[in-house]
Length: 344
Image (cartoon, rainbow, N blue to C red; front, side, top):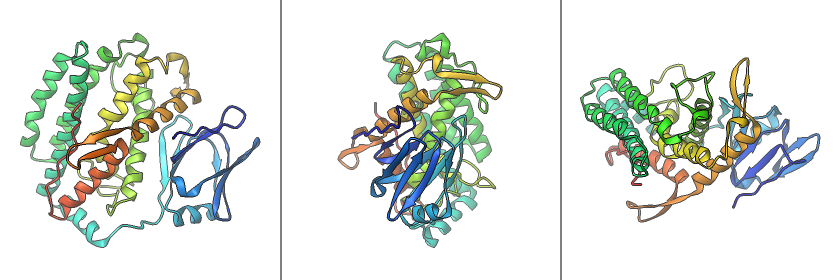
């Protein structure tokens, strides 16, 4: 159930498991619970139902709050004025094990073992990209050429001998995929042109960047609930960057969660060009559009599908957790990792 709570028609709203805060105020602890306070008033937050908090507004926090969030195992994600991910308060790991960390490091340091995982991540991402294009090809969108090009690029994945060549191949697949966006969206206001990031050069790239930031943080929150260390990824190099495993896992789910959501929002005109501002630092989404995006993303993550392997319906969010469990089994030598591929 989705519960919306507004202060004077704007500000913040609560969704079970995830709290999104858009207005300015102070997030604090009160005895054994949380509250968010603005000039308009104070709202209490049910701690036991909250797994993560995403902050888009100017919000004050203190050490007492962070200590409480750590005890309650609640992650805190910060986004800047433009909606881009800035960083996280990642509570003390409660499930991390030395054994699993050693296994992660072992599979990273051994290039052959690392490539096995990295190739499967790229293969899973490519297959989900293919499924998205097949879906729209079946609805008479002119994406056949891009679909064929991607299928031709999938075969050489196995031939890659290092992660650099694998990343280059993955980049080529996504280039062809992004060129199909104009046919799918079919709206000149949201022409793709080329992939651009900070700052995005057009409205569509702004939506993609915003959605990707959200899925990266969602994957990070799910990793926190496993024995895995988010700092050790396989496709993305483990270096001075804080987290990489969440970037790996997000590659698999971006096409079927973020991209499909963007196509739906634009197709139903739930977001239009009037929902953006153009400033000196680039294009940014207005608060109304960001709320619309996260609300529909939350509903998407709660949507269930029939999972053939486990024989019961699971939500999209649960699929992310299951992906991490599969990776754990691979690292322990129990079962070879196979990335999730959508069947629709």
